[in-house]
Length: 392
Image (cartoon, rainbow, N blue to C red; front, side, top):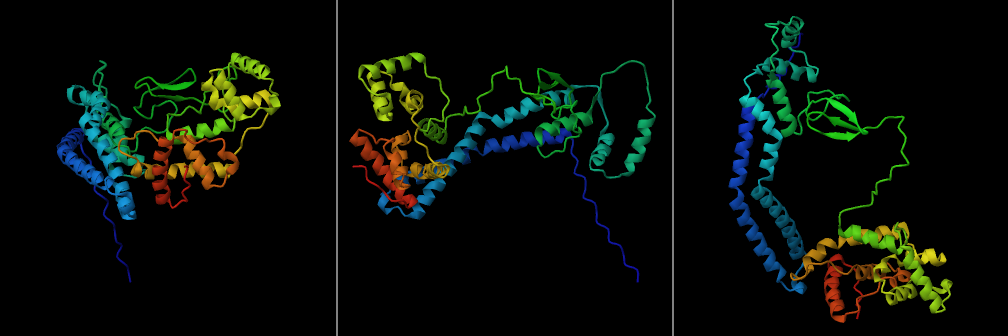
């Protein structure tokens, strides 16, 4: 018995012109702009709900209430970002900047070559699929016809189509094969200049490495530890300073002043500790070097600075990240700054039973501010189900 062979229909080739795609983008931007009033109304509604929940007594606020507040904060942040993007027309401007040269060539150039058929074949060739058009186009390419010796500068529609997709569609498979001499962004020629691969056409560049290249020790190394300010980065910086893991240059005059003060007070440098050195810096009006005291002390008498284990330091950083959302929930509306970092690290050491480090993180001297911190910290501890240690 002969079985009938079932054949699957090939998916239709949904091919659009550059003009159609440009029209779709413009329509999409207009529709997004029309959504602005709706988004603003939704934002006002969410803010009102958050304001109502924030006025609720913390003792009456259960886990569902806090979860909803957390959701509202995230939703408001996302909506603000969307509204800001729509009002500034950032997506539209980015689209215009990226596509304007292509669109000008497409609509205004009289020497466009109608090569959509060839483009259609090339698309199939990229995916290694055979098509009847390959045969005809192959024959055509073998016998080029030269109408006139006159040179005419022409632009291929297929090339413009491909360039347009490259800048508007991230999922588009670029037609240019991976080639060190061809730019992956625009198809321009790549040149090597000052250790970089530079595109002649769009200016895109990237570092050029060879297998036999060696580092040039005459050139200064870039500092990879320069980060934009973030809370976690500031915490990491404080921990590094305490453990003298920082790399900083203390001016010689500072050491001269300190040595003179130590000699004046008849203090044995081996008896110096972090707290005595801070008092000396205070008397010398050099408070700005407080944060470098462990590093300075190590230079003066070789005393080893405090040193957290990797596990403890990782726990501290994780706890710090975990309290960010609860802080946003319980932070008073009139407060803009985060909690004092020394206070936070003091509390972390209490929770982790790291009593030997507590003295390095003094609490706030102002009792009013300390009570305000304790009030916020108590709510955070209840939210995180941590034990609360009162400061006063």
